[in-house]
Structures are given as structure tokens and as C-alpha cells.
Length: 107
Image (tube, rainbow, N blue to C red; front, top):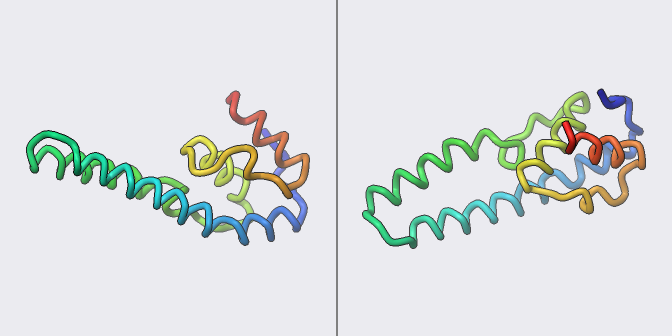
């Protein structure tokens, strides 16, 4: 279990980055939806495929996150696992947080 008492600077940096991370992730999702809608197959199949994707994607941290300091680390781990960010996106965060995030990839 990682330490949840990360420096104030991590919290401030997280708050400054989360909206850009989410915006970029949602742009990626929109492109994936376009690919689904542009694929061969019936209109109904494509529509329902996108509807199912959106239904699942809207629950992801990359789309909708609970922005609370107590959730910051778990949000970061979720963003990495969802493909919204990578470990490289954690440049500027404390070494402790970066190491804990990297270790959490093995959970």
C-alpha cells in the first residue's frame, strides 16, 4: 500500500494537469468512436458498439474523476492503466509518487 501523504506540490501539479490529461484522453476516445462508426457493418451494429463503449468509457477516471486529494494516487494509477497517461507524464511529481505509481503497475 503506497503512502498517501504526498507533498503539496504533487497535489497542485495533479490539479493543474488533470483537465489536460482528460481532454487528451477523450479526444483519443472520440477518434476510436469515429473508427467504429466508419467500419463496415450495419448501422445498428455500429451504433450499439459505440453506445456500449461510451457506457463503459464514461465511468473511467480519464473521463470523469473524483478530484480529491485522498483520491489523487488512485486516480493517477487508473489514468495509467486506462492509457490516458503514461509514467513519463509524471515528470515533475515527487520521486516517491512516481516510484509508487510504477510499483502499482504490478498489483
